[in-house]
Length: 266
Image (cartoon, rainbow, N blue to C red; front, top):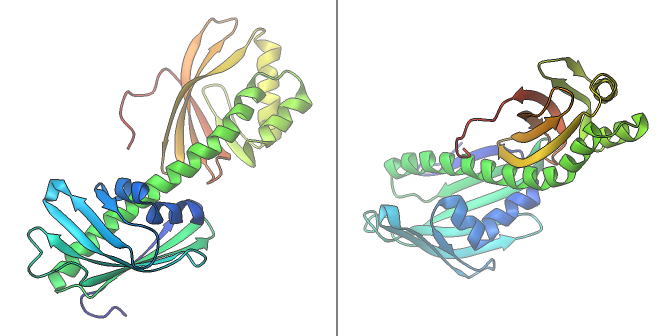
């Protein structure tokens, strides 16, 4: 049970523990995570400072302890300058972040102790929930983008490979065994059936070719991947909506004709 004026939150994150740990122990990544200007050295005793110009607030404290093997960080936290400074001075509270392996990737526990009031605890709980959601987005995107660098070449190679054995090997290098695929023409489950479907494209559409456009957008375990095709019916553009494992393995792929909406990443 939480003691008064303490926030205690746990969040499952679809990212590797090392990816999450790099975010919370690297000033540049910490800054991007918090949407601020954060400076510190990842060693015990280092001054910690986080400026948030949009809120006219500077948070300050020090790294109390850091255990890279256990992935556990303690940092004192309070307001050096800003509206809350009189009642919540620099270094007066303690933030602890622990990152542990989990079935889907990582589990992050964040506690913020010694807050000066229940209202501050309530405000910080809402803020930390938001930031943990952002942490999940940023770290998952980092892992998926790295994973897609590995898997997408195999995916497009498979769609341009007329040899059955080499095509199946390429699909197995980028897809889960039970990958689901669907588009305007078919729906199926399993790499073997998908390989047969691609083989039929060569059989019934001589000259078929699928090429990446380089337009890849990643958000929370999913990605949009742009492509163009050429064949007997001419050229066509489209994109795949994919659901991915943390390492970039494709689990479900849905093909759409036409360009994706021109909206920024979430």
